[in-house]
Image (tube, rainbow, N blue to C red; front, side, top):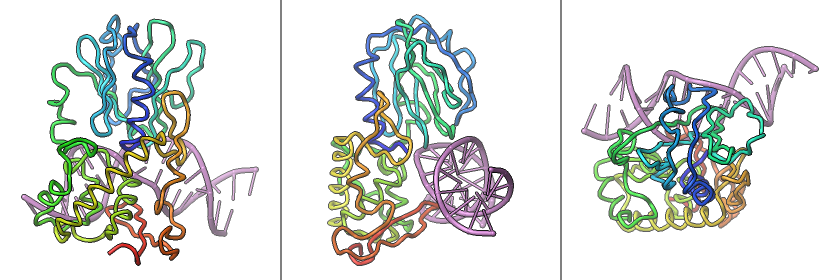
Length: 269
DNA sequence: AGTTAACCCTGAGAGC
DNA sequence: TGCTCTCAGGGTTAAC
């Protein structure tokens, strides 16, 4: 379940290995991802050098000399460099072939990920156009959350996980940020004070920064660009249940917007 | 217009 | 052992 820290970990691991390399082509073994991978991908990218690997929310943007590839890892996706002789597994759907013979390999058992080519300004792409601010960037703070929440009756957790509110926040980090801020996840977004939103914004920023520093959270299958797991799972306070790290009471589970939600009923109000 | 549910997909784990 | 059932969930679209 790659959220912002896992995508950023992937980006940081791969960017220095990819920048400046030239693509020979692509092998598409399974084009049926979230959106169909275009048939002419190999011809489209062949001969182009990679100029950068960027991130916007949970999307990765692989910049080429002419145009770019927009990648999303969905729920179960991962990207890594595979050696020239490494055989492809059942879920290795796309290889981008590099000049040295090795490949940038997209693996995604559940196939919720995507790979979309484009040209021009990626920010204008329909998938990126309506996205909210980066939670680690200057445009995001408690006042932003407070303003956007005016009149909204949905649960604050669903509000926080909406990429139009702020990008990069999935189920794990929404649970953690709300716990750290002492806010009940099922409270209506419009009924939270500006002061408490400031606390929530700070908690979200802190938990995301700590998770990036730990290389992301590996619950089952996340690995970085070198195939290594992340260690932030050790620091999760509420996700997955158990006892509250603060008061010792039993954590409770709710369902909000079809997602498992964990909270401490004593520490979160 | 805001909110909720369905949908895409496979693997893991539980229960029988 | 092997079957069936449930759950995991990001993001888009449809329906209420």
